[in-house]
Length: 104
Image (cartoon, rainbow, N blue to C red; front, side):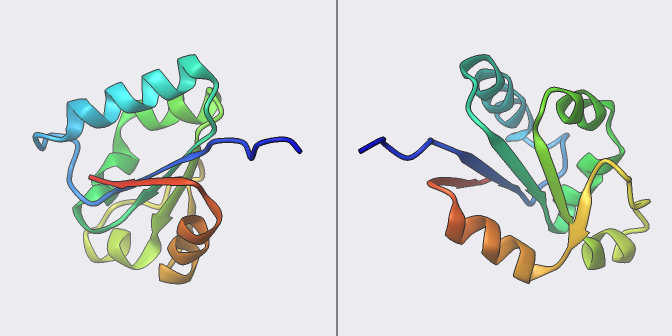
């Protein structure tokens, strides 16, 4: 029996300039190097990540990007077409289907 593929979901609730921002970037770069499938969900202040150039880079490297549409609208963050926008149901699906979830 084959072991399930390890996946990583990062739930980002703080803006990129926060203390955890560098940790997030390091985790993503390490995951990409190791070939671990990464999914990112932007919520609360984390929706400000959507406007950063890293999002485009991560998208081209295979990172799957998701975000809270309500949170983005509330904070006047434009809805990027690189991100799949949804709500808490989408977040629930990501958490329930993947093996490792980190909230930063």
